[in-house]
Amino acid sequence: MKRPFLPRGKRPFPKGKRDGAPQRIREETPFFVGVAMKTSDGWGVQATNRREKGESVLHVKTRDSLEDGQIIVAEKLRGKSRFAREAKLVRIVGHKDSPDAVSLIAIATHDIPCGFSSAALKEAEAAQPVTLVGRTDLRDIPLVTIDGADARDFDDAVFAEADGAGWHLIVAIADVAHYVKSGSALDQTARERGNSVYFPDHVVPMLPEALSNELCSLKPHVDRACLAAHLWIDKAGELVRWRFVRGLMRSHARLTYEQAQAALDGKPDSLTAPLIEKILRPLHGAFTCLLHARGKRGTLELDLPERKVIVKNGAVVAIDTRERLDTHRLIEEFMIAANVAAAAQLEGAAAKGVACLYRVHDKPSELKLEGLRDFLDSLGISLVPKKQLHPRFLTQILENAAGTPHAEVVNEIMLRSQAQAIYSPENIGHFGLALAKYAHFTSPIRRYADLIVHRGLIRACGLGADGLTELEVEKLDVIADQVSKAERRATAAEREAIDRFITLFMADKVGATFPARISGVAHFGLFARLDTTGADGIIPMATLPNDYYIHDEKRHALTGRRSGRTYQLGQRVIVRLAQADRLTGGLSLVLVEEEKTLSRGEAEEVKKKHRPRKPKKA
Image 1 (spheres, helix red, strand yellow):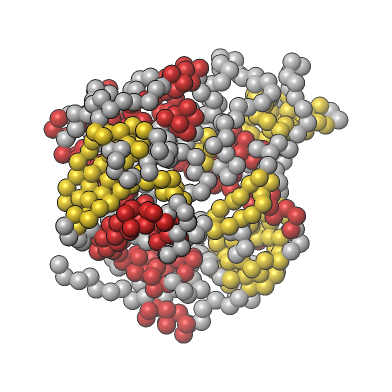
Image 2: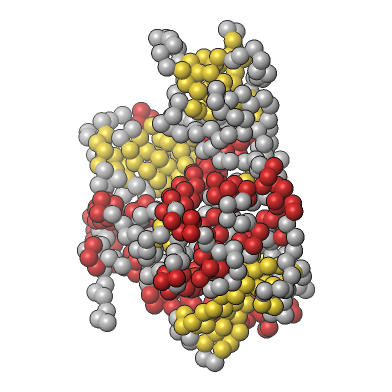
């Protein structure tokens, strides 16, 4: 993990704002991020947000050592001039030609806190390894971590063994609560950040590296403090009992997903060969049971490719799709089981005054569900009535669409129809996972919500004096709102950074043609996603064949009034890259060729295939 960046250059702030205080950069505020440009008359600033059209005159005080090409935060000035937009310099962030410019822009735009206070750093550096006092000794249990090859912090380790006809699992999680005490400087900064933010070129961590990369990282062959969930599942994969302990563990190996998968596939290396029978086979056996239970309860199984942008020294060297392995799913299922147990434990301890910060996912709203129904109807696909809606019926639609030309777009629209998962002290269940109770327990290094759950478990199970405080219980709704907003902020920043990196990668390919699929339809044009990179670009209405186009929102289509030519969501097209704007990250495309949409007969065939199945009687 690289060190979190600190904005470079002088950082003047508005009156009343101390140096280092976070600046709110939101669309409803006058603040925006841009690149400073030296002009013949002084200074100008070009916004990095593609929705901010044109340039602004930039007012710079003589004490500000501004340079041409620097990334800045500026404040719009209202009513200064009838003929030009004006802004004043707030602070300097970096330079557009620096290797980390893309991440700097995303961080400044979304107001991601970066530096740590001296008090927080002092607390982290003073932290010491724990002893066995007051802890269960788990060091002889062959727990292992399985993570991505580029992971730098390891906050979960797993173990499984046969237990009669079922399985005994252990999910051990770094004991962050031991080091980050409620109300401390570390706690305050972690709560402000809400979570770590992951960019292709570096990470903005929730906790200082002395903890996130060291004492709270479950590195192999060293003693580490943990909070462990003992889970017992029956032969059908159902969770039958659990127990939480505060322990001292020692990871027996650090494995990657690819490494563990290769070993299970009969291609072990020198590290995994001795682990296959004792560790990996039992893990996979327990996973198979959990997978059976998942299928039985009927979860929403979206199939959307995840882009992986590989960056070296600020340059994109490759864009790939992350491979989905059984070992990825294995870890996910173990984590889900632990999260369910954590929610159940805290819910059962409610009488003791312990609260739970649930991870909740509501059913689709009436409006979104009708939008989904209209779109599926345009493909000849039926959707069950809202009263009967269960994630298994949505998954059936996705399974039937698999392998068809519309598979990707059906998955995309299904995702857009879903409610956003949030944190809440009020439990409404998790619709997507088809679970009655669920809480995030497994990543306290990078998510503050998990740290709150850990504190709740410590209090509920009598595992120490550093559990959830009365003040935290009283303000749990406020904390839930804060961490939910921080999660959305991080997601938006990460997505924006990936889009900008992809635009940089495409910049030298202007004029080339690419196969693509229409990924969005609006009254002003089309959006298309390139097959090769997953890049999204806009096809402006003015570039479409000459006609007057009518926007059909229900069908997600544009139809020419004279020609009858239709452009519909999911339609295959060939496009030419007309422009790649390095500053805003936008791609402009021109339509070269389109494929026909489904005929009436083809739509009827699809409709037959997607006719909803009647639910089985209980």
